[in-house]
Image (cartoon, rainbow, N blue to C red; front, side, top):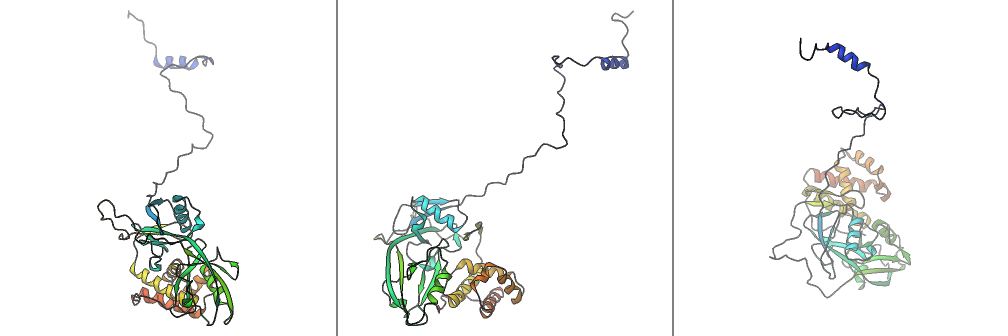
Length: 341
């Protein structure tokens, strides 16, 4: 006889375990028994959304053009944010900044900060200086001004035509912010609004213009630091950060065809409206380069905010001609464009 008796049938053992009464509420499960999964209510547990990797943080150096320590700014995506970052760096009001130039403290409109900043560019902020007010008699049809704006509410003088009315005014200078005309405050107005107001002044009448010049200082030799070895160069990089009045900033490599086309379109804007706006010129180029014919181009303009400028059919045709020439490689860069405003 076996020492431990006859083995029970496996089926019988399973049936006996099944027949046992359920455990009492306080009865503990055996330690080797896994807990039952939670009941499903028909919905699966939410899954975490994939997180995009952080965008690279671009850092730029800046100074106040009349003299200041070097500041470091980053994290801006448009023009207004850029101005606010500069204001925060120097604990000033953003309304004190008239405009910015790249890689020079001088009032050089060829270096004016427009729609693009090179990743190695050094930014100089030109701050409000003394106000000036004078009476001007409009003895000719055109005053001889080219107006642009900083994208943040200030229109200012970019060029003065030689031998024009404004060229004879000793207190009017390139870089002056046009603050008032006949007592009307122009802060917040776009350049084309200011240009239109000046253009509509009747010939032979006298008007009062109030301007604010950039702050000047005796530190004429100020410039970006060359570093410990004096070998650092600003503005030599190829990549640029394109910024807009609104919308995200983008990094890319400038295209010579685009640059020439934008310059030509800007020249046409100066002739037609007396304004200079690289962002507007770039937008017009983008519309034109994506159009197959003049009709398509005209339709795009009519369906956009640009229609508010009131471009004539002849002017739109001139724009299309410049865009077509640029696309075909027939457009050559010229040094200057004549202003007729």
